[in-house]
Length: 442
Ligand SMILES: O=C(O)CCC(=O)C(=O)O
Ligand SMILES: [Fe+2]
Image 1 (tube, rainbow, N blue to C red):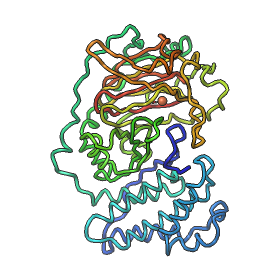
Image 2 (image 1 turned 90 degrees about the vertical axis):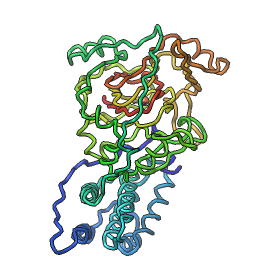
Image 3 (image 1 turned 30 degrees about the horizontal axis):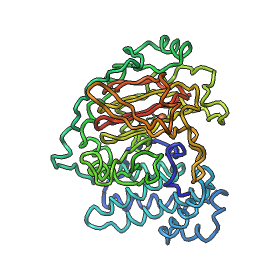
Image 4 (image 1 turned 135 degrees about the vertical axis):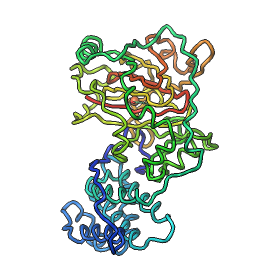
């Protein structure tokens, strides 16, 4: 299985080290780029390969600086032959260092235009997304910060207008998720201890700078080196469909093709991406909700029983979800508690309690060997009439599912946060352009 083929459930979460360093170099008599290239080269020269990377063999290590592209290709090929979780570390490590060597060569042979900047960003982001960049993160960050000085703001008007968000008609349902203003930590703790049910919390994140700044595409471009940063985009109906694929593209290409206009390639979703480790400056626009630091209840929901326990998270795991109207996340459950925060636009959400999993027709192991047991095979078609929602499924395919009336639903509006207890089934569909952040914790 190729690394790019991994579905969300297996997606890597390894972008590490958010160290942000201020640029310390000044041009002086020597080009700042030559100084930076020398500094990066000195690190590579000084480096005494640790045992793990020696496993790649002497030849690729010896060629690292002289033929970085070939070494990158070799490491990538090796990485792609393994299932993501089992990739031996040495090949990831080799890819990271060969990428660093390639960045050095790009800094040394800059052309007059800005093409080399595009290329450096691409090489670094590829390495970050593919390997997690656990070893060279600080050097990559330093290089990216230095590049901010040569990137000019985009003056074209299309980027400066705010996303067009038309509020949807309100939902008519007898099954609203219970909602409230921001509860105190004590009352939130009491809620999860006594009920462990979803809770829609209004107005808890209205103070986030993101509530205003993320409305403007020009701001997102500014924070991403003029939109040059690479992001993983899911293209196709949902990750359960066969023609679904993931592709890395620049944030600028993604927004232009899929968010600001309707693409002929269908829906493109930057879903479940840890954008905040990749671009730490965006994390200053939000804050981790205090609710993520309460103690989760001890009991495991039925959906998670029999599944291997997940590792304790040292800190909440953040993910960004940016996309146009019509992105869908099929019914699935996660092993973490979630505070899901809606920043831009509106999203429909439907939840089912973690009982009677048989009626959710969960997938098994798919043809690529990926365990999809947390995802329902029910092909949900969501229609919205003036009277509210109609949730269409082929009842012949899923009679037990259709009989379930114990769902809860809501339309999340900007400023809303939704507590989803671990193991609860959830379906999401964006009703406008939407940008949300999830905080998983346990
Ligand atoms: O917003 C979405 O599309 C899905 C969110 C989700 O599944 C999650 O936060 O766990
Ligand atoms: Fe989820």
